[in-house]
Image 1 (cartoon, rainbow, N blue to C red):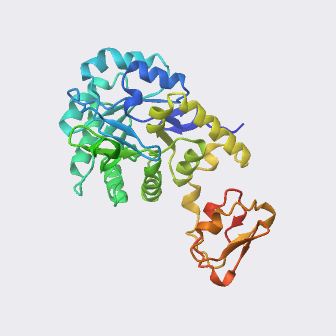
Image 2: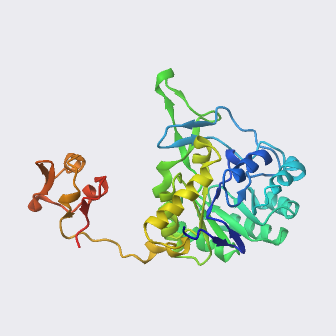
Image 3: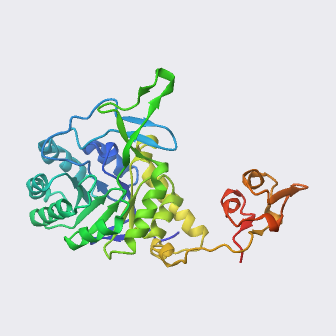
Length: 358
């Protein structure tokens, strides 16, 4: 059994998996359900100085991606301060309190949530080229509550610039990434109506944004020396492995907790444990940042074929647009002169019969 213990901002967590701010943590009861489902820490739904008027409909699941027009909490800050945070504390887990959005709003809220917050997470939405509003919000939170402050990052093109600005303003850590958008979904079975209420646009989360999140974390981890919590499309233990290897110290889960329920946290932790055991790693620390230390690959030879492993499924042959791969008596073979070293066949093979060249 691997050691999943995760140390983050002075906290010691049983494992690196927690909820993200959103519908699965909409109130105290939901937070307790996440704790019962195996989360190692709790992250509360973002509050602002007034309750949100959330449009309806506001969520739709398309399996490979998820759309939402969710806003911050539809509960008042007073409701959270008087009832929901206290109820969540019954779980006995570290609590990250999410606040938004402007400097003035965060300055008003930070002192009030201080009794409940082990850490404050700031949601500042899509940060523009000017980092000053984000930096001012960080300073307001630091001044209002003597606890570590995280900043949630949107899927920037220049993530390193924003991350360095957050670090310079005193952020103790980062959360990456927020949902991607705006995006649009159309219901073709009902006259082409839009799936989302409000303005009709939605924000995308779920498996489709995982590569974006990994890229942001990989970029940011090479630029800053503060911890990063990864979020975006995580639903399995293998996903967590990718995020940790990219440089994350812990992860948050939202969409999978909506579609699969709060037991997903413990399930992912068990999958992570098994993966580490099967691959000979003794702890989560052993894989953290591994991808940052790998050279960028350069494929100059055709893939290595493990004919003994080939089942003859033909997936690689079907997708080889160069006609380099072929089956003979249900065994894989290659016309090396046709191979363009694109590498697609390696990712397509379900039985690990094609390897990068040695």
